[in-house]
Image (cartoon, rainbow, N blue to C red; front, side, top):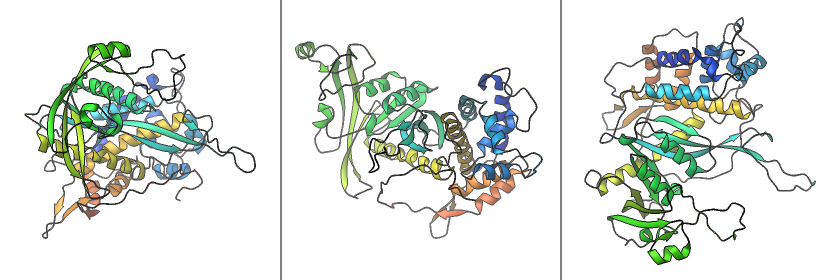
Amino acid sequence: MGTDRLQPDIRELLNAVISDVSGHITEYCEHPGRDFTRTRKLPANILMHLMLNMAGNSLNKELYDHFPDKKQRMSASAYEQQRDKLKPEVFKTMLSLLNSSFVDAKTMKELRVYGIDGSDFCTPLNKDSEWYIPNHYIRKDGQEAKGTCLLHGNFLYDLLNKQYIDVNENRDEREGAISLIDGISDAEHSLVIMDRGYSGFNMIEHGNRYGGYYIIRHPLTNTIKEINELPDKPCDKDIEIKVSTKSYQYCQLYGYRKINVCKNKKADYSDNTVMSQWDFEEKCIVKFRVVKFKINDPDTGKQVWEVLVTNLPRDKFDLKAMKCIYWLRWNIETSFKELKYALGAINFHSKKDKFILQELYAHLIMFNATARVAAYIPIEYSDKGYVYAVDFKMIVYIFRKYFRPFSKDPPENMYADMTQYRHMLKNGKHNIRLLKPKSAVYFTYRVA
């Protein structure tokens, strides 16, 4: 998206998506033909508009801000009853419609560059939740300690355009990633980047067969033998490995690498047996390209070796280009921070699984909308060479203010407000990652 063009009104695009979906709302109702058939204060289109614009405040405050006129305002109970009529899939459809309107996407050598990664969301405690994890620790009073609810999301993210493309809630990250890859519409012009946790023969072969390109960051130890034996110097080579799920004796006789798969779920395997996933024929030749180079570790500042497994052509993507692409994957980590703490995807307004999914998908839609708005605000350069960009949190706040139904201000006013909040970009900063336990933000602890 170029910043030299007219700044569009993204609000109109969102309203068009809402109007499109509400036109056939019966497809997304729990009880088609009965839900949203009577005239109420909160019809389907206004309900979806409200849910998209929700932040992290208490439910009553959200309703008060969205409906200043008390004659239009409803109770929190009425809101809950109306949203219970909607399936979460309605927001996934809206996300897909919004993404399909994206016609001027940035590419790298005619490839859309995607990142796949997972992130956990702490949700309010609910023992009936599908995501409930019991805590088997017994307290001094003899009672079992409270468990936790943890929603794991797998995301397909456009790294160059800052757009969430798809999401699923599979707890198995590799299965979730395979589902995301299979759902890419224009696979031929796509490049998918994944982190170390996704490496393995099965994922590599899925990458070889889905029709596009992939890069998988690969571990240096406890890994494929041929990768482990690479010399400690920059290298770029092609590898072919014959793999099979047949017996160990067969693999030894014909030179195949044995893949242990669980063929009998009732069998009592040893605890030391490592099972792998394999979704293809019994015998296969897995081909891939391996690139090894040195980088600066952001945590220690020391030079460390990195290995990437890919099927990108060497004539178009040499060793230097692979280094540049490698750093792109960190954009998805930044997006998780903005999704949770700028959009408020850690402040859910219910403990029901269905409602939490509704809110998560709604936050993804608003993230994409605000990211598009931010892309149309040009970066400024000072006389001293400093670079100034707009504050994403303020973009989210201002966009929500202008997206409210009573706001009639033109888009020029919205962009003018946003450009007042800039901060200097400081490249090369290295902060230590502090890992500490987190919990859901409960309903009674919301900002007034």
